[in-house]
Length: 68
Image (cartoon, rainbow, N blue to C red; front, side, top):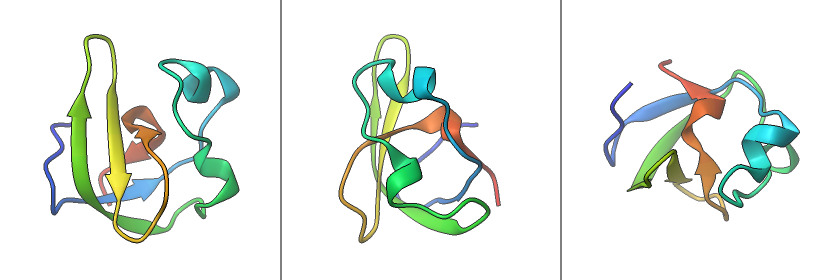
């Protein structure tokens, strides 16, 4: 899935390994599984992509999200 600012994503949960890979923030503490969120920033790294969501503090591993 190619993400762009303005896209919507559904949070599907995130394992400890997905959180720690690349020092991401823990979305399990602030997001609800199954809820739809709006992407405002996409940071493509060498081995993973971090996303920032509208109204949510933190940067999260994109593998923890799916298309709505």
